[in-house]
Length: 357
Image (cartoon, rainbow, N blue to C red; front, side):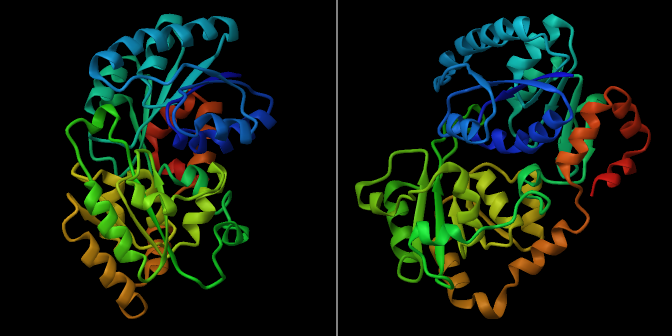
């Protein structure tokens, strides 16, 4: 089978890296088309995944519309050479357009309910839309729900075991507590009109936490000069080890919030967008605290830091949350290998997915 995958964000590399490795070993051929966003290319190179660039994309609304034509052209040009049997992506409308032109099946993975513009753009061209079962938006007859989180594509225990080598790279002693703080750029199309921390609030929360824990910041946007010394200095592929040993996460990034929550780390998520389904599940499990703005975040962080040992059991809550979840990489491998029969199987018997725990 010849498989074409589109990558639009660093997280997408993690979604597909284990799927790529397994399917490659089974004799399938791959081509990845990737946007040049943040550390995406670095991750693709680290995992030895071949890719073609489709540029950096645009941030303005008009720029995004023009970029559709450019991205479609790059994907079409390479698809005509590669001759894929199937197209797979996380919420990529570009892949849908080209798959439709070439009359090839197009499988979309999605977990972001509020990305309405993306849904409008890709849904007519999708053959299958795979979503976690906590995804509360009805995507119609094309939708197949699986009982897992997209972060388990790479954080499932079959693939991820935290490595304490990261502590020496961070300059942290064993047993020493530290916090991860993340700020996003607010440049995604589904982020228009949304906000997180002001610069003064960023300084305030970091200085408050740093009285108790070391602080490491990861930021898509420019940091205030006063916070530059806190910027984390590790390779992109080491980030999940860094968060796995942390004692607190405070940030605007939904993906990182979900990662820390399912790893059993106290998670304070700040975003004016209503919670997505997977974050609601993590909130209900007592793993995540949501704030629509910066107010109250510092106080909650201080409460967790001072009362953590007696009040919260985040690791136990995470274990309970994940105990019935399937391995989504194994599920996707089966689904793609056996498509389109797998689609009919899941429609007739959704419980079949539990063969992939």
